[in-house]
Image (cartoon, rainbow, N blue to C red; front, side, top):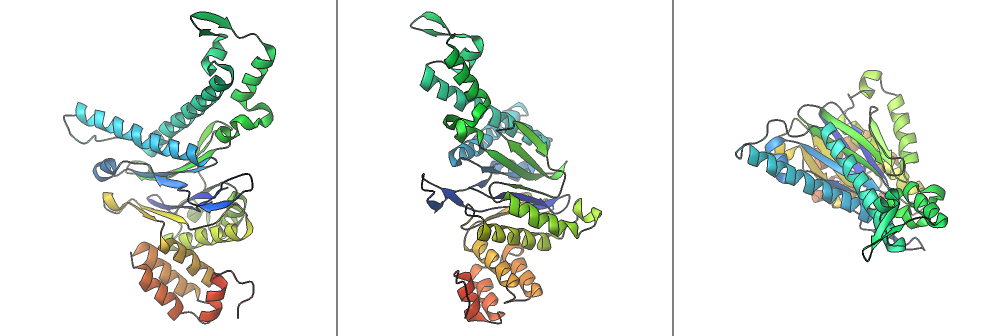
Length: 347
């Protein structure tokens, strides 16, 4: 259970936002440990080329981790080879976001085929490629795959016909990639293993996971009040960040599968290369959600909330400083404390 999201502010900046809750066992025990969105560009590439991006996955946590680590590995290997061919010089045009999305799609599809093939080998003793070829070898002998029940079962594995549970953990995954490069600017892409697609997100935002319905409703309403010019990439970063956080706050309140600390990743293509992506996933992320919640319950004004979020997320002020300012500017400190602790009735 997940909420992974990305929002484009303009041609060079945007935000990714997710929760950290996952279900652990058949009883749906909730634990707050998942890194659902992770930066996926090696540090060397960020500092030398300026490409920054992060990938978020909804579905099976281990599948998401495998995809993210494979992206890092493939990029690092490719970059090292390019530099070696250029006598150690930095490649002028390494990858655009479109190029990166193609790489991610290939990784996702290869991973799907590998996991399905492993499941088939464990159950039937032959791989997916053996099934397609119609035979496999065992003890030096060629064995044809002719049993109708086995053939039908294998087809279900490959196509997920009937939504069989054996490969649900593979097919029920989707992803969001967002980032910036100097040629294409800030872009967002969505992926689905189940439907086997990759698509560029042309609207302002993307939302995935069990919290997507609430995020989509809230953000669609927010964007409906914007002009076409603003919708296409002229959203104020501070306003957009606050509304995005508020949308996730609502998802946490109304969706059983969303919760925990947030992971906030801000992108700014105009910043120095090593500062184009800032990840905030500690107490500051929790405080940001509480500031926006305090605004919604009218414990602080909209202007005050904006100043606090600006200091906390965009200017790098400390948690302690901004937390103190929150309560200093609060009209009802005791009621705010009760509200943030989950009391149904403040006071």
